[in-house]
Length: 473
Image (cartoon, rainbow, N blue to C red; front, top):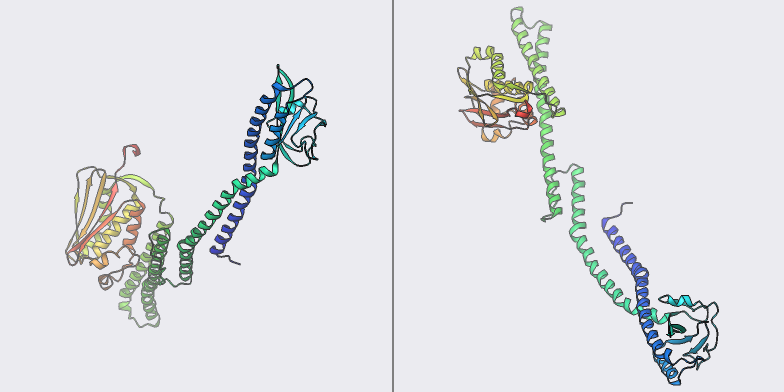
């Protein structure tokens, strides 16, 4: 069963409160009690020291004291709630401030009394089992003529210390209660600013998962939640565009494959039933060969794109002169250009134009750009190819004087299978993949390609390639 984030936060809040209270009640209370005991023991030792100084000088050979001294101690014991003893070195109690009560222990000897224990800061307990309740006890020796003549022992009930400790803890409990109540406001704020937006985002993600890419997550804040909502909305819009692109992609592929296949099938059927006379068979065989060549070109372009996607970073980099590649590629178009009287004008810089790139891929870029320029150039025209250098970058430009590209189409020319209306009207053999392959190859080299075009004037493509660095030579 799925538990909501709000429920988890509420449970965490309650657990935090319980654990915090237990910590204060157990750990903090214990530490406070020990602190109270230590401070009280220090005060009692000071008091016992004063009593020792007052009485050690009047201590007689028989262990007697002046009556006035006992009266003072009785009064002190009565008003402070303390119990004061005088003990001989052998453990005999010679004075108990409770001498007038039934609990008086005057004259009794403490069993197992160890004078060495009087050096401890304090004792908690029944003081060798003599007292009936638990007390805090401190001992100070009485010294005269460098000899211990007895001990002053002061007892205070630990119950009184516990009450003092509890009174000190009361502000702590109240402070915790106030902080815990205020923290509930934080829990509410978390619900408003975190939990509720997350629910909205989750609902939007569910809508996207169901295919409703038109759904909008309505969160308009400038924090991380707002950024996440904007990112998801952008993702949905991109997925919608991608979905539309895939639909058009499949339609274009189907169309580009179906058209030549339909032509081939129709002509072959005509050959089979004898519709085409023998004197025209050569003509239609050339048409069939042209259609198969078109299918081959389309298949090769798609395979090339697939290879670029899977091995985008696997480039075989080497140093070569780009001018040599351009000359060789121009020669491959001699037949096409001669039949249409199209010429190439080469404008090469005299500077060194050696580049560091994948020679085979760059040759493919040049071939596709020239093929594109020839395709959209009129007969009896000139295609200008320029190579020049700026700093450590070589620029290659291919410029035609053809039909040009509109501003609306120029942003879409890198899209696979995209063809302008002019392309579909004038070039039935185009695959719509040439410029997409060019863009993928240039991106793989981490460089750029620009295009400038004017309708009925012409188009110019310019790409950049880096020169070899000294440490790469």
